[in-house]
Length: 309
Image 1: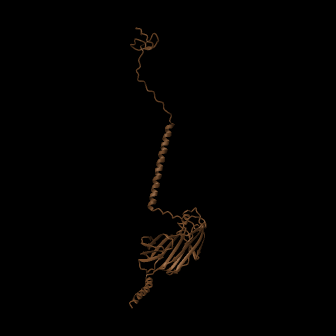
Image 2: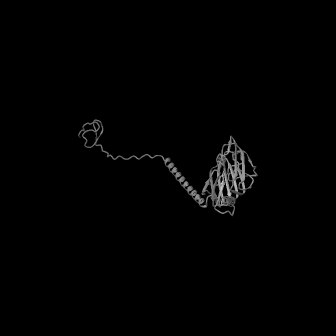
Image 3: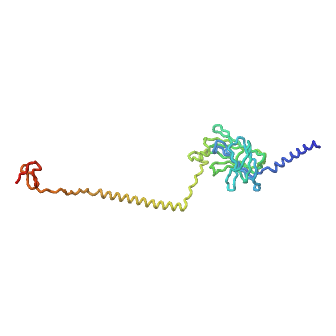
């Protein structure tokens, strides 16, 4: 009997493991997977948005599956107003990431490589989670701006034009995804340019694959000026106009004065009377006839002695 006791305990433990796993199995109300090849990197960007049921107990621990070769992983919780905050602690492994979310919605983003052969591209996406039960699961595939042909397996059930990116997105069928179910998506497409979608959308001079099939988003209109700004602009215009008029008046007056001064004939300077005293002549030299001053003993011109009278 004592030898059988360990076997009995081991058997009881094995019976409780499935029940424990079932009780702690996470249930998600909705999972949306967006596949964006050649968007802002020559690889495939995967964006996953998960939503828990309304009665979910928070915070909730989630083990989320990841494919081989993923890189640049970001995990964020989504607030009620739509903001994504990546402040959660995560535990990454080769094929999963574990985190605890305090919000009923969360967002997971990462990149995976695709296969490229000249202008041909192919990527595969596989979903397989042993832990997550998903009530509704849906995949959308974005058509790259440089893609001329794109085929999907499974085939799309519709397409929409995204106002957010300005690109066409193909919708695949919505279906439940119980834990342990495998879901695969394969896409093949041809490109006519090595440019990424963001490069083409940001340059209006670069055509898309279908010409005008996916035009670049129109720039946001400039905000309307406030009433105070309009009043200030009006005052600036008024004072500026007055200043220009004053400057023009001053320049015109200066030109008029200058022209009046230039039109007057130049006046000759008046002769200044000499301040020298005139000496009265009292006689003339008998030799040269020059005038003689009073008291002169010799002629100032020839030096002849003045004759005494």
